Image (tube, rainbow, N blue to C red; front, side, top):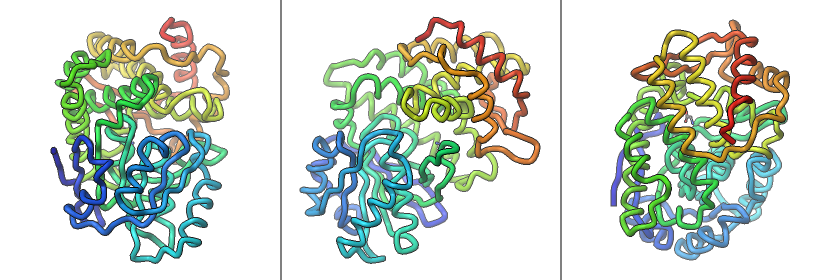
Length: 360
Ligand code: GLY
């Protein structure tokens, strides 16, 4: 078992990684001194696989939400809140989310606002949720106008990672999660890029679980360092948005149905690398390294049919904007540069260049 502590405004919490933990969650939360969650929330895909054993082990009720980014919305939050009220949950009760980033974001947000806030435990079952979404306290949902536009900082009480859940993850989801690994590696752990090369394409050997745990915990070491310093993103936490400005716009422009989040981020990383080069922040080697890491995640859903004006409009709605416009994070040779201004016409130019790439 591996563990780390993440600092947060609401107190430190533990992230533990243990193969097989989902099926013995009751014992795990007891060992960690965390109150047993009374409600387990998952989705219709992950529920039968991992939600049921989790709920059984905890002796809790399982709620299954519709699956997919398109369901990361108010109606899902209302649904969960109604179940919790009908189930007689109190303010002192705790709840648990089992699933990918859509579930941990949605349930974490529901926990943040239910009776003005109840404790929650995150059990991420996708690579993306393990390395990013479930840790750091950001919770939220999408609005019609854009991605993650309603939310709260509401850190979990405990995060339990069981890399055995990756065995049931479709390869497409695994590839999408790797985009967040590439992002994290560029921000704070370049050695990770080498590990990724060893692990990808997915190695089916018995060492696999160990390698995934190593990758996940290294990513979380970078993330914990960043969020412990700047939980509410007044400064350097914005680094974690590398690749996300275009990524979020692509998701929104296609109604959250065309891309998995990580796939949109993969395109966003390519765009950010090009922009970093254009702005004199990143050399040719750096741009090539990011492009090579993203190429390894192919196939990606095509962007050829996406209207540049729709992308321009959605970038204008990005929540990381101030009165002077959208604040981009661009890669540099040794990390990232925050608060970069990129004219909308230049974004569209780079987007058109990407459309010419045969990466999908
Ligand atoms: N996923 C970006 C962040 O946690 O800040």
